[in-house]
Length: 365
Image (tube, rainbow, N blue to C red; front, top):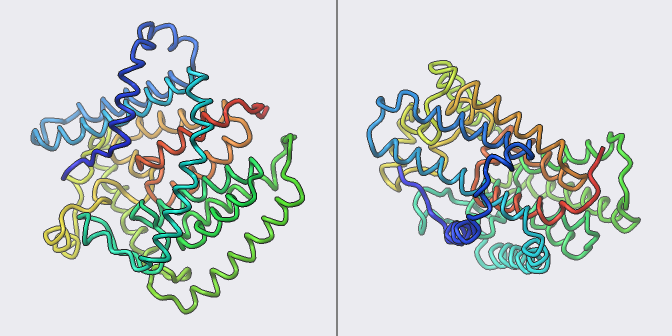
């Protein structure tokens, strides 16, 4: 098992080190920031799970777990530092649209010139994707979540062109999990009792109707798909996820309090003969260290204490969020029921950036 290190994580690490002085008075901001404190509690549970029964694993396996925990620390520090510097947020607001345009260009380019994307030929451990939008994320679900977040943000800001393109690419991922996440957001909007200022204008309503029509078109196309991944009514992946979640529950039952240790799930999984043969041919799967649900992954890796701390942290996030932030958080929370969305590194970074860009809006009460 290996731990991937991405270029953007090196940039984040440099940014954190440059501003590390902000943590000089750690006791002060822990007393004043209940959200930060909730994340620290979650981190402590994760660390305890890694230390508990560490002697049952070899040095390499424990080192992998430490590196995964270190990534959580890095992202937490990055989110806190970014939230404290208004100048950095203003720069981020100006440059974020460049990133969104890059996402759209990458998605359009990939589906136009490389629709049958087979990243496993170049990057070990990734699955093939036929006639689906994956952009440069190499995974349909991850791409669906990223484009879904971009669409929600663009709609809220009333950028019709970017919202339409993001929605088109979102639908092109054929990610049913992402579709369910958007459905959850729509239910929240419909049933919300909050008075939301600047509610989407008439053209945003037209955009919503267009989205429904495009979704219906997606169902029609999926009836005669180019690949199995385009078949929205497929059941094979549902059954596979169900079996994997059952396995996660069984792993948790063996160590219910603190789990098997964050980042060490792979070493206690009972891989099928097919999975073992695939891994022997192309290397460790990127899904091997998690289950198809963030909540089950946290439960199995850090036990009931870790899951409780994680849900407490999400509760604090919800309490501090404004309307746009709540939609983004709800979108991730729903999709994380069916895949390990909230612990995917580039999804986490995107969420941190969007959270800070929109934090100056009025908080929902």
